[in-house]
Length: 297
Ligand code: GDP
Image (tube, rainbow, N blue to C red):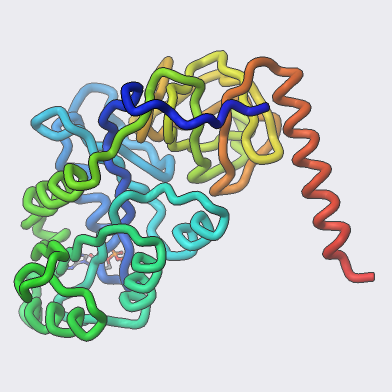
């Protein structure tokens, strides 16, 4: 059977928080993700050409790291949750200070509450003339999101993704929240992860961006991912560099898959290729049965 045993407390080591940014369209999710990507000290290093792989990690001055899921949009979030993949540790709710709360803001609040994930509110676009951050705080109160300034325990911070202000403070609040969560994983075991994105690449074949939950994924590892299997031919990080391994909370592109898995599919390293194929084939047959059962008579 697959080794999904729980890890003993002594085996656990601190891991980076995984953060998702949510909010109404045009409130600045993409801009904020881009701006935060620039906050890492490693961003200017040689070979640091940023790749879009669906997630990236920044290294801060104190060497701590934060992983951001670069998949704005609530669909990805709720779809992964529906499939049982709770990959996010912290949600950043972006609210534009001029627009205030909009339908997708409220949807994001509801998703976050349902997932029981702590939220940090980023009040964005405070550079705009008609920005009204206080009104945002008051409206949040109506939705039972009580920010610190209103004597609540939800952290909030005023930012401008455009002018790049308030970003350090936002990063500090993420770190503070992460400390409270005491996030840990065992890096010394066969890897398990979740597919964030997957595609068929013309030159490279099936490619999946995997966020490792626990263990360490290495080149040469044999794995099952959803109803596909494979052997890691190469691992590529968010800066487009080949790496030999990826530990907990690290996102990597995995090459060497038998086919394209779906976002939210779990990846598990197994002992050998025969075993990997056996599990994948079994899962394919279950999928086929489901499809046949659903097909109209
Ligand atoms: P998304 O749909 O939530 O990903 O929003 P985008 O990041 O695409 O931003 C929508 C628009 O708002 C773009 O035209 C951005 O340039 C603009 N924008 C984002 N952040 C700011 C900000 O802090 N200040 C101002 N003035 N404009 C911003």
